[in-house]
Length: 130
Image 1 (cartoon, rainbow, N blue to C red):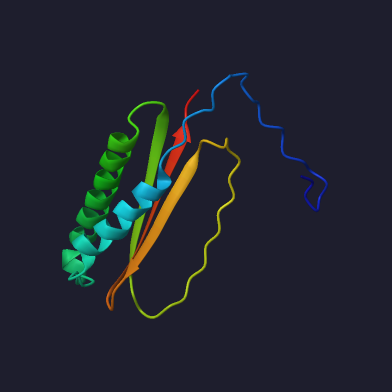
Image 2 (cartoon, helix red, strand yellow):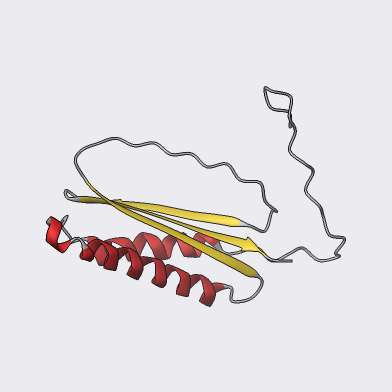
């Protein structure tokens, strides 16, 4: 596909295989993340400056648990990336976009959780290895 500047993305290399490559089950992962975030953050409030290590602990726990779930769903043949962000909820708006160039077997799952005090976004990538 040509961009407005006339540049084109390179064609993705395809392997000649008789069977389709396994695809990661992103629907199961998304359902897991949707339940996980409120289970950890439902009663959480944005901490005072001296207690900000709580946010780091929440981020680490969410990231580790999502990664463990990804490995249990499909332990072989994928590399995993989990991004977790928690911000104070001050009523601000937000916008994000993502552009990827990958194979059909690669996938992403993302979920957002918000309460009166904080906003959490978790994005998990499963990238198929050759």
